[in-house]
Figure: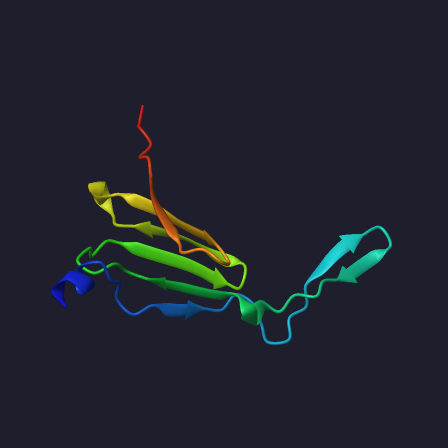
Length: 100
């Protein structure tokens, strides 16, 4: 419906920031210690919001929750998206910085 599309976004692109088979480690004085972490469990997405040509949307979605930013561009506002694994994402406005 028109109501639904007003709040939707254009198709999102998946961002890959690790190579297949990448390992995560913690450096210690005794050497690197592997971390049991699968980067494929975190999906990074970017795109634009419908009706806002200069907008930017970034979302990180995982079993542990959702984090992201929706920047509508110009004076239209910037919003933070956050949730914990069991809850629905919350959207809150990020105050604009005042320039001196």
